[in-house]
Length: 355
Image (spheres, rainbow, N blue to C red):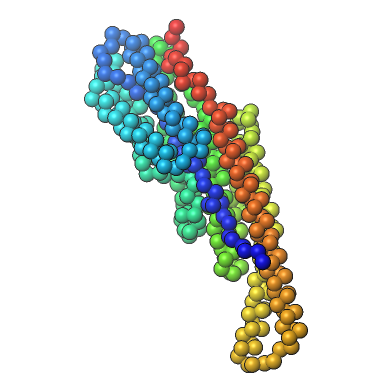
């Protein structure tokens, strides 16, 4: 006899909550305390220190991509935000800017402070499926909106910083390198959020199957259908953002799997609950009235019940096995997408276009 376990997406350990932070951290810069002769010297030194900070974050980037143990990732994470705190303290005390102009320094400190806050409170953590799935739907969707808002606001702040950096260069006739469009990490963050939303609801659905309440299951499925359709719309919008469409394609595959999963399992679940309720009525009637039921009739009811029950649980079991393999492939695709699209060589590029 098979033993059935209610597998959920939370059973697959994820290290990808750090993917958002990876993108954030690779954008930061700092400076050292000196008296500069001119803006060119200040900017050159600022850029040199930017590369130093980026280099110090490479270990964290590698630990995320290589799926290092959570304790190692957390240790690295704590060391990084401590470094960022030290950088800010040093800048505040010692960086006097150029000709007293500290706009670039102040913009960097502001961005760094936002980063430190996000690192410490884990507001953008994207692997807490089980915790979130235990919440009411109103709280789940409030959490979705909050995370999406934080992503948008953070990358908006990065662009604001880049704008400040550009303006600072223009003020002193120095062309500073900057970006003004969505980068690979922002793209990855939104793709991870699509995956996260469906996993939270899927975890909730798998748990609801335990309690034999069809109305609760249908409610969850309705929410999942809505999120799935919204997600397909977003993947369509993302399809031309990068030449490498592997992560977008992986999300489309996962979304369609969830849709087909629910179309297959819910009718089987409804049949199982209906037969279960009928069988319980027969048992209750027999116990209350001591009514004699023919052994053959009773056995027929038992076989009918077991057949419908096993049909559902067999389908659920097979579905979870296929889903587990799909999730593993998704994690691999996510990792490879970052490896293939992060331009780590830029770590050593000049900060400016100076000769």
